[in-house]
Length: 324
Image 1 (tube, helix red, strand yellow):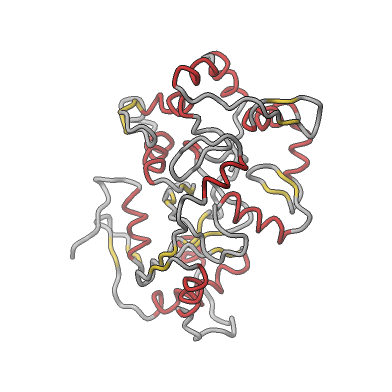
Image 2 (tube, rainbow, N blue to C red):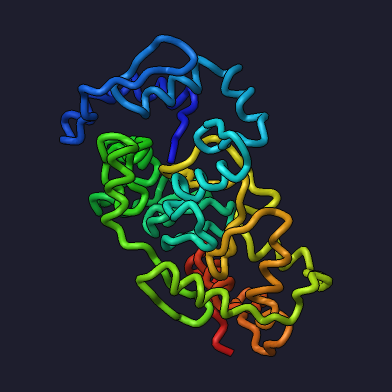
C-alpha cells in the first residue's frame, strides 16, 4: 500500500527534522538499497521518499497516469489490462490472493467516509482525528503501535516516529519492514482470515471457505431480473458513491478503493455492475424474507446485525443497539 504526502506535510517533515526523530526512536530507515525514479534520474534510499518525490516533482506525469482506466489510483502504477489491475489491487492493497472473491483479512470500515483499515485501533484513531474536529484538540487516545496515550491532535507526528506512514509498513500489526518486497514476506506471518460473517463459519483453507460462501447462494434470482433498491447497495458496499477518492492511503486517512467494492456484510469483492447480483446471490434472503429488524436507539433500522454494528461504531455513547 502507498501513501502520498501533501506539500504541506513534506515541509512539516523537514521542519521537524524527521530523520533525526526516527533515529532517536530506534526505527531508522534501512539504508543500502537505492530506489530510482522512473521519470528522472533521482534516487532515494527509501521507497516512501521516492513516492513523495514522484507526487511532488512529477505532477503532470502522475496526473496523466491517474486518467487511465487501467491505472491503480492508490499507488499510481500502470497495468496492461483491467484484470491485471484487479489482481494488483487484491494482492497489494487488500492483502489477499490475486483470485480472491472475498477479502482474506479482517477489515474495519469507517461508517462515515468508508475508509478501510486492517487494524481496529487505527480506525478508532481515524474516527477521532478525521471526524471529530470539535473535540480533536482536547481528546487523547492510545497509539495503535506502542499503546502510549497521546493527544489526538499530535497523532500525525507520533505516527512519524513509528514510520506508520511508510509504504513498507504492515497495516495489520504496523511493523515497519525494509521495503515492500520484505513486507510481502512479512504478511505471510499473518494467517488469512477465512471467517463467514453470515453464519460464523471459520476455516484455515481458502478453497473450503470459497466453497462455503458459494453455498450461501439462494439460487432464487439467477435470472438477474430482481431489482435491488439503490439505498440497500449504498449501505452494503464500500466505498460509497459519494466517498472522496484520493491517492492517499494508509495512516490516519485509511484505504479507499477505486476499482473494486467491498461488501460490508461478508467482505465480498465485486465490480460496480456486479453489486446488485452479489446482493441477490448472498443476501437477498436476509433482506426480503427476514422479519427481524435490528434497530439503533436513534430509530434507524437495519436488516442485518453487521450493518447495525457499523452504524453504532461511528458515535460511541450516542448510538447504541436498541434492546426492544
